Amino acid sequence: MSTIADRSGSVLLVIDVQQEVFADAYDRDGVVSRISSLVDGARAAGTPVIWVQHSDEELEYGSDGWRIVDELVPADGEVIIEKLWGDTFEGTNFEDVLAGLKASEIVVTGGQTDFCVRSTLHGGFTRGYDMTLIGDAHSTIDLSEWIEGVPTPESLIAHTNAYWGNQKAPGRTARVVSASHMTF
Image (cartoon, rainbow, N blue to C red; front, side, top):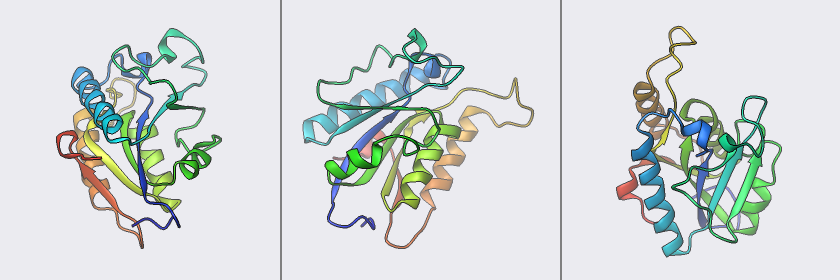
């Protein structure tokens, strides 16, 4: 029920599941495994899978840490969006890709919960897309060692799920679904 006219398709978005981003991610293996299952399900249903790779001064483009984790391999023909900002929409061709795929719903997985996942959720929602967060298929790292008062990854993930599941806006849907309950 998005506000995007003449579109009704969905895409699975895999945000920044990169070697360095996920090296110390909370529940890393579980999250990567659930994303792998979602990718398999999307492909089987003919739902496009879109991969996102972030780079900046700390995550150098083309470096080993920049690569997608070994357990996940984009298939030939799947779109890879390379970005410099938290929100996948900013400074990329993501909206053009979505238009070409006739997508109005974006199913979101990946990392980091408190940065790129949240930014992309809000970016899509404000642009009129229905945004589905897979509640057990996103993760982050523990920043409390460097930033005083930052909640644990488990708390950040739980808060993001609760917050996103209660978003409301005219003509758009925000929801949180577990990986095992997501159907494409």
